[in-house]
Length: 161
Image (cartoon, rainbow, N blue to C red; front, side):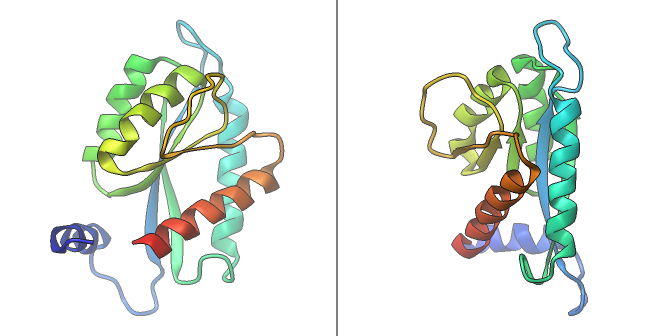
């Protein structure tokens, strides 16, 4: 990491006591209503992700010394709206470690943009057969599967930095 990256990270974390876990922030765009083209699958997937975050944060053996927080927005499964939300997530503190995306059109837009910021994107659904370097696809069938994949991605990011 460059010196500037470390300064941004330390500034984003703010003053911490030695006992306090380090907060890791995640941005999520979930289709909570159908909107003009969409699918309201976020109504089911957002609670699953929240349960996974709660499980991870309650297990000291999974991410010792860290606590996960999530900032969410309603993409309405609209790529244009999701692009604005992506901008807001990236340029509004705190710094986000990864992005969660839902519905194929939104996941595609975010996955195409992710390499610019070197962000990992976890999407639970994408219908296009295109490989994106920073995209990890997840089927939102079982909460435990989401939790395991989610933990592996987060742990990998911590060890990479």
